[in-house]
Image (cartoon, rainbow, N blue to C red; front, side):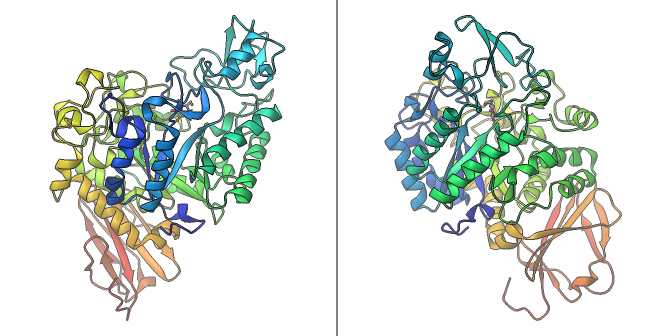
Length: 552
Ligand code: GLC
């Protein structure tokens, strides 16, 4: 990635982490900014380009910081604003960008704005929230946290009215019809951008406005507001980015790119569950089908592709059939489910299968879009489904086989969360130090794949995609193309080996070069090209043109 290119995000590999979970520098059981700074070299060495920080603002932590009680300060256990500035400097000096969560749909009910609003009908803050005397309005809006909430309205006895909330009932929605709210959020953004932050992952973007007779998602008013924010970025902070968390069907998700005048990036929510469906069905169709629905997008925008994140693996925007397949395959125990989703980490989801792990990362790093990894998945960390809410996928990072997985020198009881000690995923055996020493560990394999992706970053980052068909439904194949350069990617999603042939004669006399080891395959001729693929295996093949001796 070119650090100074305004389109840096198109070539970047992102890494999502919670400062709380990464490294505890002062032995209080909670990770902090000075701790994260100490681990920047690890991230550099892993090869990532941009850190996405989960919310670190002042908060009562009833939704792990997505319930903000002061946008302008840092929760003191995580450090100070000066520590944060130091993080930005230290990251930037290593050519790593940093983006942070911007939770703009709602605040904590402990936020002084809400406290003022509820206490007095005539207070200046009353109209910063959405109130009603009964629960009859906006009936068509779905409930998102269906396991805990019964309504999007909650009665506040102090206010004597109901307030509107799309998430937990302790997270009142801000009233975006109020221009003061719209201006305040710009102020919040400027505050952090002025320190040098490289952009925001905007939380829960579809829900800003409410309108009667709609489902209150993706409204034109919401798009118009984000276009305003984008204008502000373009004018005042060129090169910084906005990344949309819009868990929607393809057309609605795509709409957040606007006409290159809204979000720079959006998470590819449509693709994520379909990768897992494709694996379960051993069929490439769900991936190709959804990719055809989410493309094309404007040239200077990009999807963020991900396999897992800090939330449950969401199954809200899939068909009933797809959801059944997912639950049957990946969430056999009720405790593995939450709302409409699956609260498990990557490795346990795929039952620790190394081949599937590699296959999934080969997809993540070669499908169009910028890969977004979730901390700990690169070492194959496990989860703890007995912790409540989504806490089971937010346990401390496993650095070594020392006390508390090397995460903290606190007493074990003092940790914000227990470390993973299930024998299959025990930190004594799944940790950064140990895996760094083993040449064939998951961690070293991921590092190597990131290096290979870097080598072909233009093709895999910005290139076009074209699918190839062999007649074997479990084999996915595509060419990524950028200018005259091509990488042919082929994946066997089946649990058995497959032999397939592809008509590649348009690349006659090109030499496929296996991208990880740089080893040459026989040149392509007129006849179909033959591959044998082991179960859950893949190839990335750089297609070296005839007469090219550049050594790629
Ligand atoms: C987003 C976050 C999730 C949070 C919710 C409410 O979906 O990813 O963690 O609970 O917003 O803020």
